Image (cartoon, rainbow, N blue to C red; front, side):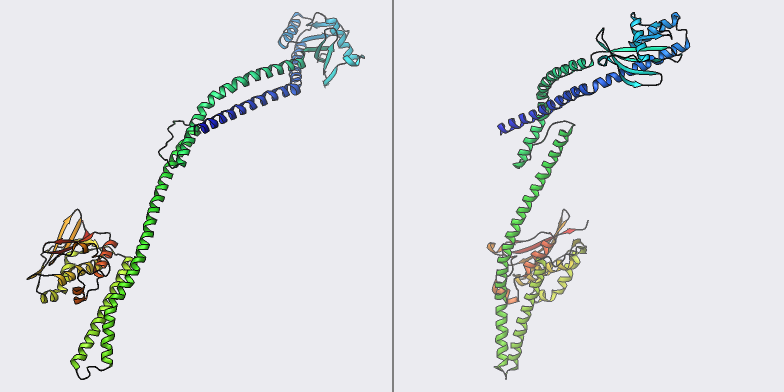
Length: 501
């Protein structure tokens, strides 16, 4: 991994150096090309502006003053000095009026040749650049000195001929010298720049390598790496974005893992449900087998008139059939209720109600049953206690607990004790009945469908073994706790509801 980092690091630095070198070389080549093609034209253009400015100053001075005065001579010298040019003015007799050069006669002869169009050898003939009404601008070559000049000649507003010229230094040679200088200077600058680039890019590439290391760790699902640089440039922004990306990825992967665990649980639950479904079919078949057999047997007896002369026996047969049919109806009804609760088809309607009143009402409905069994019911709570829950379903829980308590109560007399305790916003409703404790190995199975601790006794009072499964489904639908506690002298079933503050 270290080798890979070094290779990438050098590659980035080389790219920066190469880009810098190409830009610098391109800039130097462009300057050389411009010097070769445009420098001379630009130079001539600048010189033309100088001649034009000198002409205007000279023309103005000639118009305003006496050209033979000392003032005019001084003005000519001043203009010549300002613009670094040579000037000559002659009269109609070709006599020099004023000149900024000592060899004024030679200039006067040149001016006359221009005015009168004297034949000049082609190799040294002036090259006209611009021609106006009052003057002409041209380039010329002085054979005596070997110097090229840019000249302006013509007539002033007072009709005096004039000649203004400025030397054109060897512009081509100057361009060549400048180009050589640019190349040498560029090579030195490129060498120095490459060295600087290698050192500067180290600072740039260091945070980039840090980001690469963070991304590598993120690829390996290590989200503890964080970009710590305090840069306020693009790299700093990228680092902050990678930190946020790391957090989001960590959160997302955590959610995916959670979802995966939940999916595994769902798969396991589905497998358990398949097993439960198989057990359910088996249990239902078993539970219904006995009443169906009894009904069929007694119905067959009635059909064959086995007891045609005994009205009491026929009535007994009919009672058995009716009783067994009622048991089957109860089992089916409870199974439908349980199915709706377990599969979420029966919505829980949370509402505020008085649990004390609900218990009292149900005690009144089973008062005859408790009197027949000579059961003592203890419940002395009078003040209302308002709780949150599905009142109809909570009534089913209370009915199941109290019904079981009545059927399983023992003692002389048997006692059923209902208590309510309040703590931390919850009310625990407990139903205790005296009698034998439930075997410990049966406690965890009580809430399973069709599980019966004492099958014979359950069969005796018509129990289906589904009641406590319905209690479980109701309490889990309301997300509240429930349970059973063994005591030395009996059994306590309990459930909890949220109290109204």
